[in-house]
Amino acid sequence: MRRITLINGDGIGPEISDAVVKIIEASGLKIDWDIQTAGADVIEKEGTPLPERVLKSIKENKIALKAPVTTPIGKGFRSVNVQLRKALDLYANLRPCKNLPNVKTKFDNVDIVVVRENTEDLYAGIERQVDTDTAESIKVITRKASERICKFAFDYAVKNNRKEVCVVTKANIMKLSDGLFLESYRKIAENYPEIKKREILVDNLCMQLIQNPSQFDVLVLPNLYGDIVSDLCAGLIGGLGVAQGANIGLDYAVFEPVHGSAPDIKGQNKANPTALLLSAIEMLKYIGEFSYADRIEKALFKTLANGIFTADLGGTASTKDFTDAIVQNL
Image (cartoon, rainbow, N blue to C red; front, side, top):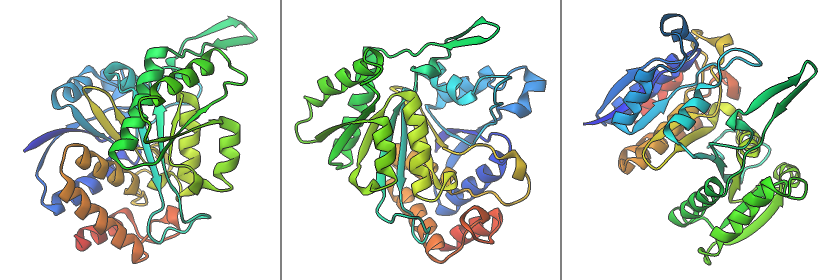
């Protein structure tokens, strides 16, 4: 039996974690869940939102499924997500964005994979207060990190029969930092003659994504642009409630939804577990459980096709109703 770390998060995290565990159990796949708590709910007791036991669990099990964890805005502790990525060197953030059955959006032909560098850029967290009226953040781009994320994007394209990898920068303005990222992309691209190449500026990309998203296949971006663009792409397919994600390194992988912990609806049986479920499906593929992943995905798609939606998608189903419908379809 495979042992997998389950970080059940805070806010709506425990609710959607329970839903996903129930669905996976209903598929017949046996998983030994190593349940770990993290985030705002453990600070008072353990003095940190990311206790060392959580990292120890992931290092032992190699794979984790993570529900959302609250990050304060403008004060308090830094993001647990950022800390996990740095501590485990989860350098690749993978966010597939594809239309789901019966989820009405402005476009019905979106199938984009966002590959975001995960360890540096402005998210390196190198900041200082210059004086009372001035704060400074340093943007870090290295050749090593840029080349390995570009290689990840091209390898993913080859493995998943994608046709093009498009690099996204602002190299016309940040000629040294983004210029280095672009240079790294060009070097790696030479090793993949079968994959089409494309270069685009991030502002132009955003405009074109809301005009004709079907023209894009795999996007590879530095950390900050990747964070923003992946949420934009989530909007193209129905919102953060259906947006999956994964953070992958050489030794470990953490699968999580893109959305936050939504404390305003905590405990109200309203949360949509789809994004975490899609992340879990991606996790099952990653560990080679393709048949179970396929069955769960089909059950989810049938549920959506039958018009059973949670409130964020315009429906009336509770978290429990939606979960039970998927289980029934299994």
